[in-house]
Image (cartoon, rainbow, N blue to C red):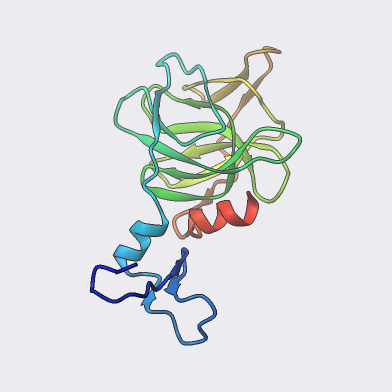
Length: 198
C-alpha cells in the first residue's frame, strides 16, 4: 500500500483527550492536549436539544442526553451535559448556568425556572450518589439547597416558593437562607468524565 506521501508504510497514531502519540512510544506526545486540532479530533461537538421552560414556573424533564434549558424569558440558559447513569436511576450531568460551570452534578430530571429567568430549580448531587434540590440565583451566581427533595416542581416568586406538584407541599426560601457562591467552579473535561464514569 502506498501512502499519500509516497512511502509504502503507514504510521498509526493514538489520540485521546490528553495527547496524540504512536502506540508503544515512550517519547513525549506529538501535540499537547490544548492543541485545537487534536481537541477537535478527539472531542466531537456536543449537540444540545433545546427545551424551554414554561412561564408558569412548571418544570420540564431533561435526562439521558445533552440539553440547552432555556428560561421563560428566552434569554437565560443552562447547558446540561450528559456524563453517565448509575444502574439504579436517572442520568447525571454537568451543568453550566448562564455560562458559568455549576459544582457537582445535576440529575437528569425536572428543571424549573422562574418567569424572569433569575432562579433555576433542579435535582442536584454534590457527591455520588446523594440527591438534593438546588435553587440557583443566576444574578448572584449562588445557590442554596432545600431541606427536602422535590421531584416534580413548580417555582414562583414573591416570596420565592418551590412547590411539589405531586404532593402540593411548598417550601419557601427565607431571607436567612444560606447562599453559596459558585463563581470559581471549574469542570474537568467532559469526555474524560464520560470515559471515567461511563
